[in-house]
Picture 1 (cartoon, helix red, strand yellow):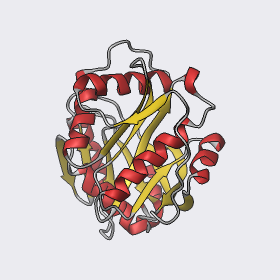
Picture 2: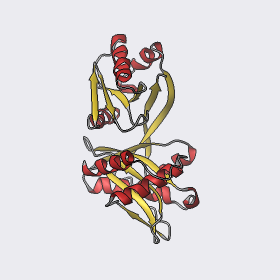
Picture 3: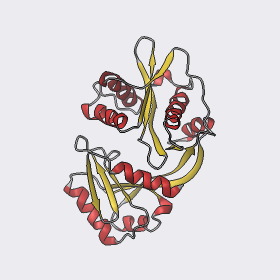
Picture 4: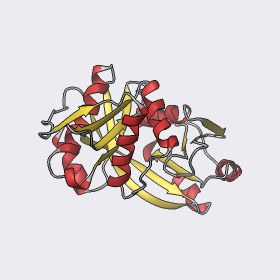
Length: 251
């Protein structure tokens, strides 16, 4: 599974608005944002990596005006961490990812007064982005056009975007999943506004996204949990621990 996940990550980076391939690395960039969580690189599994390759990657990021940053499955490039540390990178996070299949997925009830919907308009997408921004601590009143466009592109390419809305039109939370590649899709951005938490909404959104992926032909969904609470949510709906991923960047 590690190899399939890493190949899927590289494939999705190649679908970004701007792609830089340098040595064994693929960097996916978005000209509309400098966020390092959107602009990053990952190694192509199976290719050898040298110090010169890392130097070339740093130069590519610098030339693009972006912070050098990588995300990758550790077992697919076990030599890379030492090379990055030697080039001045630091570890941001080490995470274990979880996977789910149609046979393990459970469907918790959607909390009363809420309905799960896939956005049909940019207004809907803006509502979901606003809910995610608030949940993640970014209280910008107006979601950026670039963020809305990213959700639209995700849907147009076959990914899933799902939000939770009240009867009076308030978006309570949402999340998305990348377009499936090799039968795999990453679930990400699961967010619930503070006043709607502790009612099972995060689990319902996550399960709803995975179900839609499986209904459209994906064989596995995968994600990463940011803490103990998230782990419990995802395990309750059928996600199980699998491999490990590493996040590294250089100032």
